Image 1: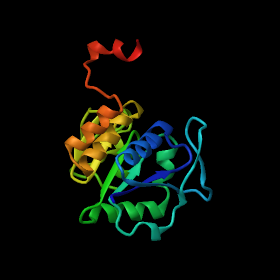
Image 2 (image 1 turned 30 degrees about the vertical axis):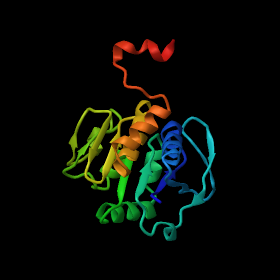
Image 3 (image 1 turned 90 degrees about the vertical axis):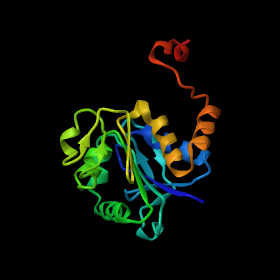
Length: 196
C-alpha cells in the first residue's frame, strides 16, 4: 500500500491539509497526519484544531512514498524551522522513489529555502517567489517536476491532491476519483454552474 505523511504545524492551512488527507485516503493510500509540535492537537491558520494521528518520530519514515506539506502562515515557517523535518525532506529528495508534495507558501518557505527546488520548475503562493531561489518559477496552479508536485494555494487544493493520486497510480484512477467526487472540467465561462 502506498504511504503518505501530511505534516501539521501550528498555523497550517486547513483546506490544503485536510483536502490532501481526504483525497489520498479515498484513493486507498495509507495516510498519517504528523504533528511537529509536542501535542497531537494542532491549530490551523483559521483557528481549526485538528487531532493529528502521530507525533513526529524519525522511526515512522523508513521508506515513505510521499511527504506532504500544506501551506499557510505561520504554518509553513514553522515547518521550515523544524530541523528534523528538514533532514527528512533532504533524504526524501535524494531517495530512489520518494516524492514530495507542497502547496501555497510551503514550496517557497520550506523547499525553496532548503535549496531542494534548485533547477526545478516550481509554483507557490504569490508574493513568496523570491524564496524559490534557483528554481524556474511558473505562474501556474499546479507544477509537477521530478519528485515534486507543487501548487499555489487553497483554491487548488483538490486538484493538487488529485495530481498526487495521478502521480502515484495513473490517469484513469485519478480521473475516476475526480468524477466520483463530481469534479468535472468546466471553463471559466461556466462558473455559474458551481454557484447555482
